[in-house]
Image 1 (cartoon, rainbow, N blue to C red):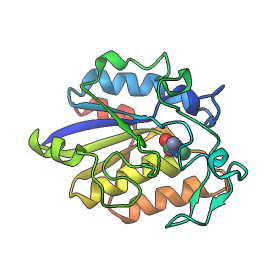
Image 2: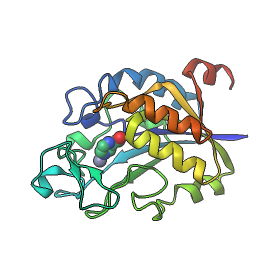
Image 3: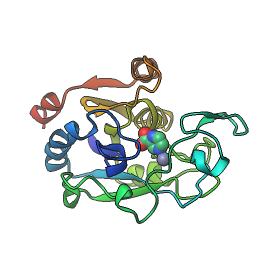
Image 4: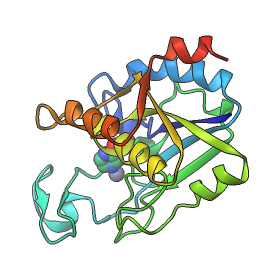
Length: 207
Ligand code: VGL
Ligand code: ZN
């Protein structure tokens, strides 16, 4: 069965030193590089927002990490992050981006965020990734990257929704865990929707 690797948002702003740093976000990079070296179908996603994006707390004059209750569904407001064309939006320099087949930018519209690599946050606007994978005969995706409780979860759940087998690479994801337990709950949700979990070493051994 054809498998594709999806490496979610391994960007400076989500790594230590970035404005929305995921604890130990950079620790996964050697594992992701090893997977990229072995899986010829690979997609890097890149959170890529215009200035004044709807997910930025500053755009709504609210504090970062507060809830935007005017959005449907209510959504977390973030510090300004991954602004298109800035250093924070670049991939982490240790990520071997040259190995990847595709780069998918998401969250590029000012008024609509996109956590998932498959659909924007309205749940219906496709990014095109499902069609791309279908046209390549890909039936299974391995999901790694940042952050477990947001974009990794959304990507894994939407992959299930479009009928793909999903393996979450457990040692190659890290989460924000803004409220303690978020990561554990995200894993439970993914498991409940039929995602399986594996370690990088198992996936490399199986090739
Ligand atoms: C993400 C928050 C805001 C992520 C992206 O990549 O998980 N989280 N934008
Ligand atoms: Zn974002």
